[in-house]
Image (cartoon, rainbow over all chains, first blue to last red):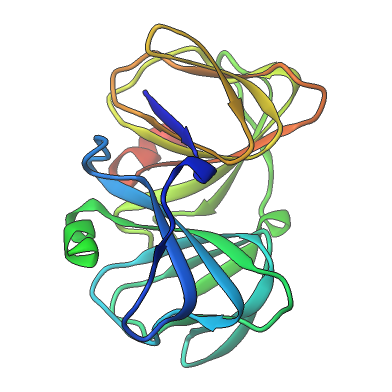
Length: 118
Length: 118
């Protein structure tokens, strides 16, 4: 078993089309996560993740805050407690339209995590 | 994209060696989750999950509450914000030793989810 607290993991700024977003790699292949990996994102008020599409899916759980997720070709509101499945190849983006930070978990298949981390 | 709030998903009692535990299947193969699936657990004060081992791994994020996780052959405290990787074949159990409900996400590989749901 491996265990650590989110606050113990370094927050790294996300570049490439993002604004005000940091990522923490919570559970990784290097730690032994063989099938999928767990990341924690924080989006500052007014911030957003890149608007893009890729072949792998996302599974997201909103921990705190509220905003807009682009999916199904439109803007959709999200709030804490929402679970979101973003299939591969679908254009998506998360925007913080509120006044508090948005925090969320976003998991991806392990086979893709090396590409994403680069 | 599929999205729903945790409160919209039915909570089902976990049997087989558990006490005071409910599960919500948030993101499932039926919804299109191809690689891994997301479940939400609630453990009442004094409750616990089965003490067991199985071939698939768990990735857990503690949303609220505190307790004990059995892993690495011993009792380990956990609290909200902890990320836990439980490898396959390792004996484990989550116990709520506090006075508030424990809520947590627990994800597993999709290939196993049919066995677990039965």
